[in-house]
Structures are given as C-alpha cells and as structure tokens.
Length: 126
Length: 182
Image 1 (tube, rainbow over the protein chains, first blue to last red):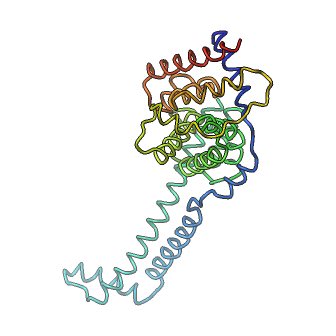
Image 2 (image 1 turned 90 degrees about the horizontal axis):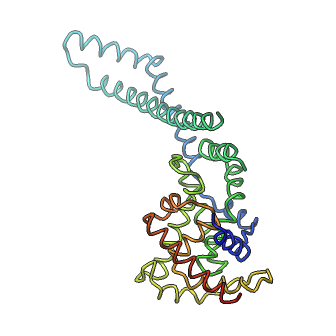
Image 3 (image 1 turned 30 degrees about the horizontal axis):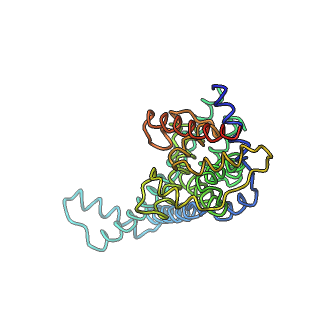
C-alpha cells in the first residue's frame, strides 16, 4: 500500500472507529429464527414410530402375517388375493416404507453435513 | 480469532445450530459490519443497527449453504451489501445506486462527529457523504475492511476495472478535500 493510501486508511479508521455494541448482539441472538431443529426431531420421532409400528405389525400381528403368507401363496398360484388382505398389506407396507425412508433420509442428510464439515475442518488444520 | 477457530464456530453453527458459535462470529464481525452500514447511511445509527441485525439473521439462516468458495468475511459482506441495496430500493425505488441525487436525499441524515481533535476528520466525513454509495462501498471495503479488489468484486458484483475507477475517483475526491485544510 502506498504512503498516501496508508494515510487515508488511518484517517478513515480514526473517523469511523469500529465500535463493539454488545446489546446489539444480544438483540440479534434473541431474534434469531428457529431453524426448524425441533421440526426435524419431531419428524424423526414420528418416522421412527411409524416405521417400528409398521414393522412390528408385519412381523407380530398374526392376521397380517397370515395375510402376507396368503398373498404370497395367491401370487404363486397365480390367483388374486382378497381385497381385505391386500388393503391390510398395503397399509402396513406403506407405513414401514415411508417411516424407514424418512428416517434414512434425515440420518444420511445429517451425516453428510457433518462429515462434509469435519473434512473441511481437517483440511484447514493440516 | 484464527481461521481455524472461525471455521470451528462456523461448523458448529452448521452442524448443531449452535447459537454460542454464532455469537462468537458476531462478536468478531459485528463492529465492522455495523461500521459499513454507518458509513453507507451517513451515520444513521438506528438504520445501521437494523441493517446489521438483518445481515446477521440472514447469515444465520443461510450459513449451511456457505460453501467456502470465498472467505467468511467476503460472504458476510455480500449479505450486508445486498441488505443495503434492498434498503436503498425500499427508500428510493426510482433512483439508481450511483445517482448523485439519491446521495443528496439520503445525505441529509445526521452525521456522527469524530471523537478525535484532528481537524481533517470532520472534513473527511463530509467528503464521504458526498461520494456515491458505490464509491463509498468500495472505499469502505478496501481501506477499512481490507478486502482486495477481487473480494470487492465478489461482494458487490461490480467489474474489477469499475471498482478500481471507483477507488481512484473516491480517493482523489477525498484527498482534494483533506488537503484543502492543510
């Protein structure tokens, strides 16, 4: 930087000092919007509950297990299963798939973000 | 605050929405961002505070999209610059950024008196008020925030030659007014 530039810089710094204003920081912190962290936890909880419920239903609920077996047998015999069986299976499968998929998405997204930033930090520290 | 420390706080904010980390970043950058707005608004503290708040709230909301293509300060000044442009648009929708008439309108705001007894300082402040917002932005970012021409280009989107010409014009204008008192 040239001498004239340095002089101008000094004058500008003297004319416009950078003053710290802690109360402004406090006010900003108070007004920070919720970034939806709570929403993520709630979604995670619901997906987990739905996923578990669907899975448990499929495995332990006898009529459902029977319906599943019935459905497989029907398909093997090239016959159409009853509407009731199909509806029961579909609801259960839907619950399981949606629940597991949502849980998986949230976990992978969080993991990706975390590993991405950890990688950046390590690169910076090298 | 070292670069590593800064990145630690940024990563904490991104990964865990940690407000303490964000508070540390604010402690570091609030004075210079606020000073930028004070200069742009000719010392209007209330507006400068509002714009500073707006800048940091936007930074908080958008920090996860920060991709380290530039330094954090450049990214933050880009938000500040946009916040000021929006403010300007709200205030004077019809006037362009480099229109001297707009400067005259907004230049009627109160000016902060310098605490120093250096007789050149009030003159310098008056001279700064006469500059266009674009010139003021370039001078502030270059001299006070020590950003390079390339960084200023990233912040403002102005061409590099335009920035150099704003700097030269602003510098010459200020030098002339300062030297009048010597």
